[in-house]
Length: 294
Image (cartoon, rainbow, N blue to C red; front, side, top):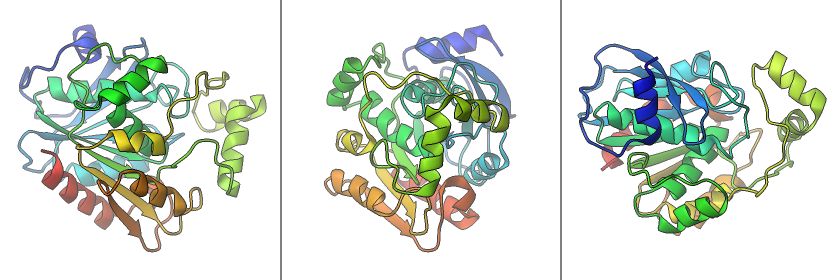
């Protein structure tokens, strides 16, 4: 857990092949641009992907040690090295969860670390909350997404001129299209967990997730507002037709917002996020990212 590496991941300019990628797993704390420590791990994988690395962004109440996150990362590691991390407020990371707002900085720190380790190409793969974060991150940090950077600055999410945190391909799995959705019972329970003091206690001690008590101010751009700013970065939207949290109008809205740029996979019989994504689907996602990430 080197302070040198944490500082580099937080603020260095992109220098390809700064280091030789490790051949054994590495675990390290990274520092975000807003000063939060993020627990992260690097798996060199078993796939021959050249200079590509995956960054896995878990769902709400997950962390990098959860079995469903480890399984997803393990399948992707057959294609290329993988960086996993715990969002703020989750697991051993610092801070408190803002449920998809400031988490873009956590993902940016993980992407920057992968580039420090010598990976010239990066594909971000997010699930549920993480799926919304990879969309917003690509819009704000994208190499060509100047409108997204302006949007991020207006919302207090300055990326401090970083050129090392952009992604080369984006995969969003089981993501919401819009904020404050309460149209399903699971989402009504989630809103109680996030907005009520008793709910946040349950989150902290029952789900190992520390949730910030403040409401969003300002409200961040929604996933569907972010999608048009991602092009020309390749974008894949994956969603199950049996998702109990977000019905299929969410992925269809996201795909429509891309203006034909995004690829949409509606998976028959699939439920929600990492737990519902079987090994075959994760392998297909890996294949897609290898083919599209530059």
